[in-house]
Image (tube, rainbow, N blue to C red; front, top):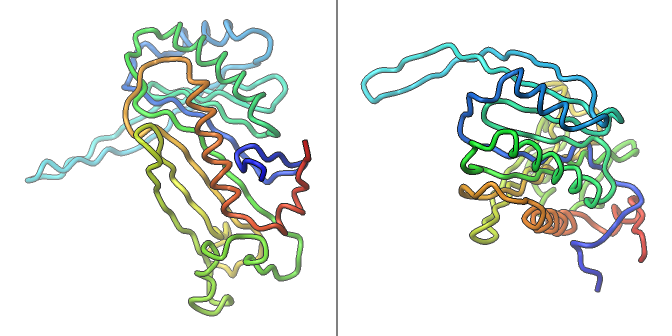
Amino acid sequence: MVDPGKKKYKNNYLTQVICQFAFDKNEAIVAQSLKEFKDSLGEDYSTLSSVVQQGIIIEDNGSDITTERDQTTIWEIQSTKGDHKITINQQSLAITFTEFTIFSGPITVIESIHSLFFAKFNNVQSITRLGLRYINQIKIDEPKVDWSKYLAPELTDSFKFEGAEKIRRSMHSMIFIEDDDLAVNFNYGVYNRYFPAPISENEFILDLDAYTPYSIEVENPVERLKKFSKALAIYFEKSITEDLRQTMEVIDE
């Protein structure tokens, strides 16, 4: 039997693969220091841009509720190939891939960025959350898709609760604790971006997010991310049927 964590496909439904390192607020992360970080990345990366997001912080101290305006600057560095980008604020570093086949390519990129970033900002004491997220948008080109043909029945039973023509959105979430080092946030279903209009697209979301349930040291993340990737691959395989595997075309090795 093939290890489900090692199956490879000619086609996939991944739209984004995101690796994120969260940490306590670091005020050393500013435009000038990030320009220096961007320069250290070399010619594989193009411009450094930023945007300011406005928000409101609401606090309840038990006797009173207070609100405070907040703004967060988010910096973005694009790869010259356009296949991934780096997103940074004072509390996190994220690498988002939009083109993905196997994990060996992205993990090399992540390792390099991680090394340069935490060498530049070496006052970061710990990682409060390390996450690896695979977002699959499964699209089937059929007039009226029967999702139970392509996905595990446990993920599609909600469509039996009430007439399918009444359903406008069917999204669900589960959290699994694998062990002391790994938790998985498993989100799935039909989102329907045109809600509350009737569902008009045959699209099913499998959004799988593996993460550390506690703080860890700033260390080389490769082995931990390999473990995360394998766990997510196993959950993906549990979620799909042979019909979808045929559509994706398994690569025999």
